Image (cartoon, rainbow, N blue to C red):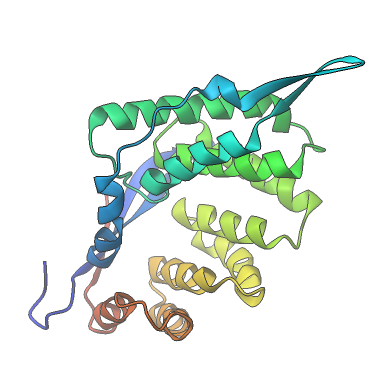
Length: 247
């Protein structure tokens, strides 16, 4: 829907969801420009996967060696991310949604055994953190705590890792912990992650700090000159067409 000035109306909706052991509002960004981008995901059917196939067994001279098929695991994570990287998730039908939830639960359970240790593989931690972040978007109980655990473990081992800082910042912002998200997003932005400026803008916007929201979104606009939707978002913010609602 457009407002009188022809700019897409923008809303920031806060919906209470369990996170990190107590109730925290999950930020749901329902922007019309985001929905335009998401249309392609609506047109795609979520795939059929056999989660057990991520576990591989190799015969060696000393016996069987068990491992994880990272390529197959990544294909599932990428598909899940197309549909559930933001809230609310975007699926063509209820059956796809339920299948995705089942896959996310199963993947989390399998990897949980491997990553719930201070010396867990960073390769697996990166993937487990993504799966549990997606699980949070899919309203899977316990996913927020697991994602937080994975990101903290990953950052303890790799404090300057760009992926870890950016994704943890996004996760914190999505779970309405904008103030905690800022240093991680700032660090990843300085490291060259363009999208971090957008996330910073949205984190500041969720705290109703319009000045810094606009500042970071303007930087993002300059870094992505072909993004035709960011101008509408900036116009909407500047004109006051941003509403916050809790329910």
